[in-house]
Length: 456
Image (cartoon, rainbow, N blue to C red):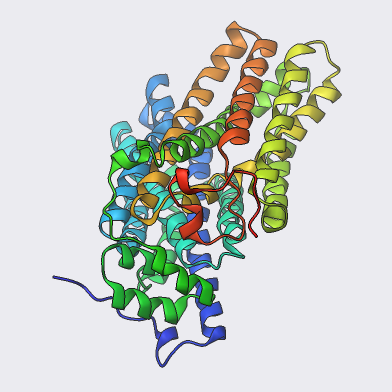
């Protein structure tokens, strides 16, 4: 039985330009809010894991596994959420992942064993993966082409803010209120509950509806909510073809899948490794306890994301991601080759890396929503997300071993090599999607213009 989505109150009586703008602001806020919670959940565990380990008598194995449980969950939740978003629709999946956030947040108040904590954090990681794979496609399908990249990259800003805010909240609850670690972890219940209620009642994506053959409903929602008449007309480019996982590796889209996955992997792998162990890495280079440098590294990463947000629609995607990946490779190469470099120079190189790496990082979630067609936009985003988390996990796991057994120089050279791979793949495969309609940016590869060709 077909379910007809009820229009949002903003659209009753026919939405005007102001109402459409208000809706776009609301949808962006709800998407950004999800990313804020993602960052908060991943950040808050760092302030509570020591107390949880002591009370639950965790072994080193379980401590590491619990710390990585959310990353494992994202690996599962990304493809699962993408599949649900493509099969069931963006609207129900967009609400479901917040329900998982809420359930997991509440359960953290009651855990009393290691395996329970691991299970709950795994569930919340799955919710994060689902949120990645539905939020970006949903926002891409409603956002006007002229603002699509900027609105989508705003999510990355929210992730950094959520991560840093979690650290501040956890520190305050620990040092000022001496709160139990369960309460610290469970503090994510408040933003999760607020966002869950706010997401209720959103309309379904008109592009997904067109793909399902629900043409009349799609056009009604498009006229009510899409700001640009050109985006409404672009719906005619949608097909009713049903997507499959195999399409990601078909002749039409294997290049797209390769680019999204490798670019995402090579962007986040060095940063997760270096940022996670920033204090100890900087200490190995003679920079005291490394705390100040680590703080500066994460702060400059946030600045880099903001720069990317400001320039993405002016400069274009390719001009932002390709040169910055080469800069990352060069500064890590300098650190790796010049093992006797003055500590001040090493610190500058790390800070440059953090800033420049954050610029393409802000675009990792933008590209999947633009280059995959509607029928596989969710699963394509989810697959890229899962593939990237393999890199994040490997980098985080292997860097301490590499620093100890191979030394700082070879470790940085390996990280530089990862950046080179990302830059080369981007140079060859990254399309320029700035300002273009989704039917064009997600067209089969054989029908696209050359990567660097600008829209007319």
